[in-house]
Length: 382
View 1 (cartoon, rainbow, N blue to C red):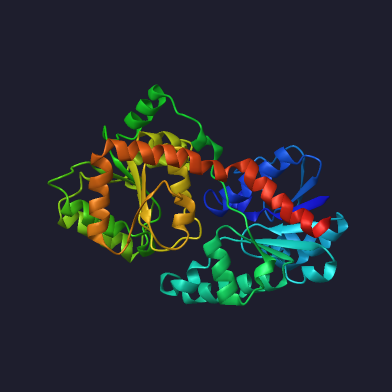
View 2 (tube, helix red, strand yellow):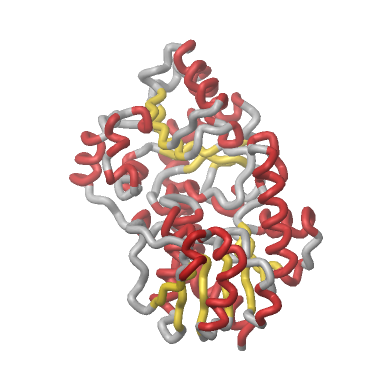
């Protein structure tokens, strides 16, 4: 079977949708080499080295002048020329009119957060996303949702037939599955000037991610726990400014460490995330009290890293954390504070969480993700 992917994100996004695209393409090429894989890429970059058993389809002639238009419409002609049987839109959209070509289509929908928190997006972006996502869900032969929460959102928001939507959980970078040696962890800690012990937060500095409530929780327990928080994530908006203003007003600058603000953030190991497994594995726990997610990848990364996770009892996060995480109401500063104290002071609980985390993480391997996606393909092209 000849399978093509929308490879824009694989080549042009360093995180998020880019990671999902690269991992899935690599995994399918590895575990199902009997198929031919084509990458529809408006632009090739050095950000991704595709597997050897893949082919590149790019804009030619006048289409080079408008690569975005080619990706959203004209690519269909090139897919037909290459005898593609199935096209997978990896990032919430499919080309317009592809249904008339006879090529089977699958689209992965990662989340509908913009539908629930439109105020956190530009109004024009919300309208554009809604148009693209709704079109993809309505016209694709099959929709892949990365969590049961996302499937529920697709059905309720866009009226899509439940039978058309398959849940296929994503995986994280396999590097998180590997144990980083103590020497390497110490080297990374020195490199980024990390404390001996620290809490970890990974996520953008936006309101939905809820970093301010973490800072407020730490402030309330400053007499019980002085362990600093290391923040991996950036943001230049009003919410990020609000968080940093709070940290400064409470004189918490030494207790909340924003790695993005340090010169070490310019290091390739930080920019391409290769140092992140060591940073995770050196942490005492991950704090991830997001109010809404499509999957919550940092939770999975932490489970593989064998550290406890405190996360929210909302949206998809109980799916990702399973029975391993400590769940809290993300809107309750007291619950976040009590959870941090409880987990940090109870070694038996910590070990139980770690063991449960290792077991639960086995459900989210690259091999499992690839096999489940291939099942979707074969159900359409058998």
